[in-house]
Length: 512
Image 1 (tube, rainbow, N blue to C red):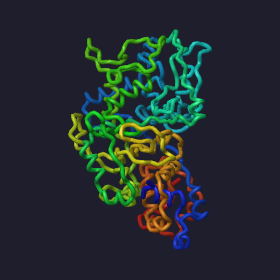
Image 2 (cartoon, one colour; image 1 turned 45 degrees about the horizontal axis):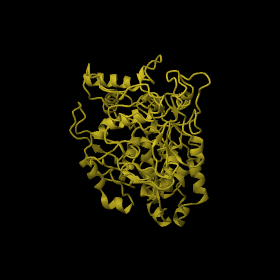
Image 3 (cartoon, rainbow, N blue to C red; image 1 turned 180 degrees about the horizontal axis):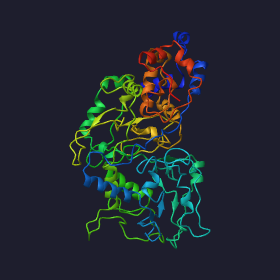
Image 4 (spheres, rainbow, N blue to C red; image 1 turned 60 degrees about the vertical axis):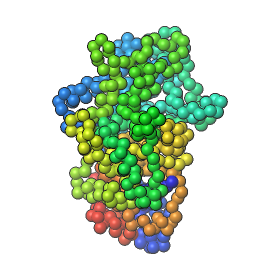
């Protein structure tokens, strides 16, 4: 369903704040409003400090040392048997999407998401392009799928159905080890992605940032249930009817991945190691696509060292994510703090964004120093919600159906480059607008009744995360100063939206 948050965001950001006369007439969709909306652009990822990638600040020295060790392993590069220079990790393939966790989780620091050649901190092209030729015998390069581009997001590909029409939904590796110098005799062909694209039978997922995930893991199931039930009447009135995904084994809440399909960070790490890099491990101990001539190691390829007691890679991957700090917000100016207030809280939902993007959760009692009973601000309820046909991928995971996705945590989004589950856009405006696909368009009268609060809602959004009209940009954790040209008339107008801005002290132009 098209929730109130999406209605209000679309009405003011995309349509713009109308003049007093048009507001009185109820002309929410006038051409002039749309022209104002078209002038608003996303300035790109925020500059300044990376604001993420380090250990949780309250950890003890030994815990921080362990975090650093785990991060180094997270960044290790794998080859088939660990015999290629500077690729000491073992177990790559037979199919794979990447050769290192840090290859996919790179921006703005190790543990993040996709990098870009000219944006952000890393400034590197999509490394998946180079995997087609990396370590290949001359003349044995593989094809780069059409949906993998130098300036596009890192992606995994899933086929929606099998050739016989039955459900698939599984990941199909972009590349195989056939033709690599360390995989002699392997002839496993790449999947036919061109055919899948032509048949509209392939969907994509991009890497989710791993910062602060130990804090999310540390929120109890009961707390998530209570949070989902909070403000129930208001949520129901706005069409918010999310649910928590749960494990089919013990019934507990699952919370990681785009559809909240993974129970824990250890399971999350084990699945990714097996699916994305092809490394069998103690959680997923069977080689994928283990065809004759392409299996070079015994299973599991990653395991606890039973001689020394050394931890398996998957244990260290999970530790890196579990001990990492949550992204640092930039709520330093008075305007940014006003924006934070206007976005709403659980106690005062304002226009309703926090019905899904919960502002505050509290961790349970944890064994890690300083992580117990901590208020965190992930801006997610970790629940799954119906997002409509335009965003649906047709893949079910656990209780999450084909159009359901977990509420994406918004902390740190000011540093992200690609948005939505498939990375279809690097424009935050388009990403938010895509939420309109969630269902039924609200009536003009409903939009008019909510109109005075539109800019207030908009203000908070960019506090942590996006780009909005210049009059509110100072409130937000903006990426960088946008071009304010053409927005002065919006500030000067006497529309209800502008009154909302000025009454909040927001109607001041953003500094250049």
